[in-house]
Each structure stands twice: as C-alpha cells, then as structure tokens.
Image (cartoon, rainbow, N blue to C red):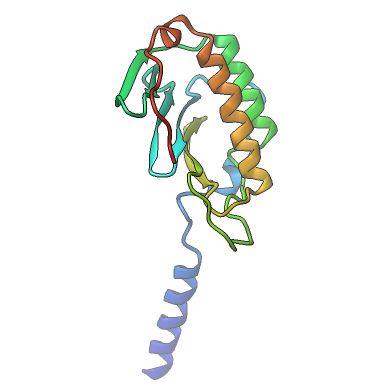
Length: 174
C-alpha cells in the first residue's frame, strides 16, 4: 500500500511540474506565420507607473489618450491593412509570440515615474499577454524591443486625423 501511495504521489508531482504557464505560448505556437493571419489584433496599454491610461486597441478600433489632469479621451481609429502588416512584420521579427525576458536580472534600484506597458496580442488563434516595467532602472533587450514597437505603433496612430482631433494633455507625472 505504501508503494502505491508513493507511486501516486510521484505521478501527481510530475504532472504538477508539467503544467503550462498561460503567459507563455505552447512550443508549437512560438513561431508566427509568415503571412499575417486574419485574426491578428493587439491591444497595448502604456503610460507611467499606475497610470497606464493610454491605449491602442485594434480589437475594438479605438485609441484612448491620457490627458493627465483632465482624464482620458477616446477616438475611433482603424489601422489600414498595410499598417497592420507592417506592425505584424515587426512583431514577427522580434518573435513576440515566443519566449521573452521582460524582467531585468538586476533590480538594484527604483525610479519614479517609470514607463510601463501591457500587451495582448492575438495571432492565428493564440492570445498572448505580456507586460514590462521600467521601475527597476533598466530594461531587458526584449522590453526595449517592445518599447520600440509601441513607439512605432503610437507614431502611426498619432498621424491619424481622429487622434489629432483629441484634446492636448495638461500637466505631467512626477
């Protein structure tokens, strides 16, 4: 009976060690298809610290702008097929659906205010959530790539008439 109990315990421990973390894609989902799938969409929220009020959301074709002291403003913004393909190609280049190191190994300081992003990306039926923070004074290479990608996307959005019609932000973050 003790041997059966130990065998059952060993099986449970092994099964428990093989659980898949939902934040990481399954191995077969790590490579993005060369051609952009029809279900490709993303949402990125960004800002400073707890104030990640800016949002670019292609699931709903909206953009939210942080007006700092005056709340937020929302606009309907749809990216063109070429813009989406360009963004998809950049995501594919940095392997956004693969394993990304977003937490720096050294966390020996803290800075405020700090930038922070959270992402949701859907590619070929798989949805992935990612986030990074600049609170620890340094970014990993993968976090820097996400920051560059977000800046690239924000620049596209900033050129849209609907975005340009939003009010200007007032104030700042300390």
